[in-house]
Structure formats: structure tokens, C-alpha cells
Length: 133
Image (tube, one colour):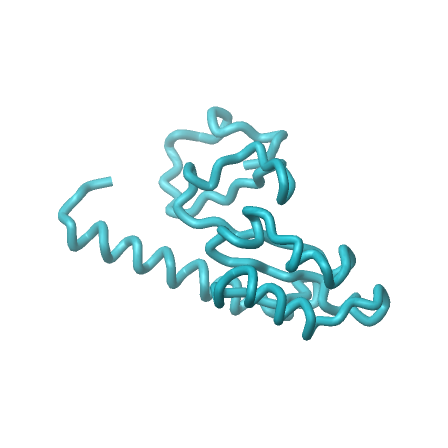
């Protein structure tokens, strides 16, 4: 879902187990509540500089997965991936962070792995509880 595609425009006949939504917000004033999502992925761009993780904000600190994308641009923009790794680790209290260059396919498998692991864990909990969804 994005600002251009609303939930009520999606075919209700579909039974997809995964729905990706773009919040349309930023790290400081998102207009989408993470309380409404089962799993949140926050993506930042290396081109924003290596100070972005240490600025904190709910996307950095509270997302289930932080993705630092466009790592191939780090040298060109003078961003240190080591600083970003250190600061993300501190701000996220060790929560998962994946460094990627999605355009180049780097880190994509790790992103998918994190999402699918969480999905499978949630599915197992639902099955064990006997609830129907």
C-alpha cells in the first residue's frame, strides 16, 4: 500500500499472507502507526549521511528491522558504514540491522530472511493457540 493505493482498493478475494505498506511519513512525524502493523521495516539511505542512525526517532529505535540501503554510495557521500553500524546498534539496543544495496542485490536475502523468520514465528504462535484468522 502507498498513498496512491488504498486498502479498500485491493481485491478482497486475494488471500496473500503478506501485505507491504509504505507509511508515507518520516522518522520524526510518521502518519502511520507501527501499532497497526505486525512487523515494521524502516529503511534509511546512506546518502543521508552517517549521522542518521544516531539521530534516533521511532523508525530507528522501534522498527522490527532497520535497513541501511545504498551502501554502495557510502564512499561517494563520505559516510562511514562502521559509524552507522555502531550508532544503529546503540540506538536499537542491538536490534537487527541489515546493510544493503538493494539495486545490486546485496543484503536482499538477509532482509527476506528476517521478515520470513518473523512471519513463520507469528504463524506458529497462531497455530499453537488454536485461533483462526
